[in-house]
Length: 149
Image (cartoon, rainbow, N blue to C red; front, top):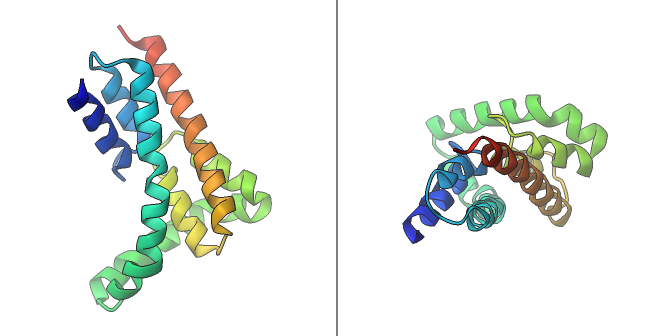
């Protein structure tokens, strides 16, 4: 059971899936589905402070390398294109909705990058990301609980 929860958490912090993938994988195990939800949610929420630290401190160091800078600019352009209108028009609610939609390309990684790029106040952005992650996780959890078995 512990192994199943750790796997759920690892998928939930992964930029390849976040809780959108961690929850369905965890629900396939014999672990308690409520524990799976909480573990995936908490792991996904922890991405925000880690990413903010990375963007504030480590990113500046890596920008010295041409290949990294090229990739970072590509990611920044995609994040701006996908989130700019919603976030600039609706602020907190736009960021929350952007993170909440359980489809690839949205989520806490994109929400954190948007926070960084648009200089959104960190406490407000953390709250918007957390609420968005919660509702996204609920949507995925309920959907997969309904179709489980």
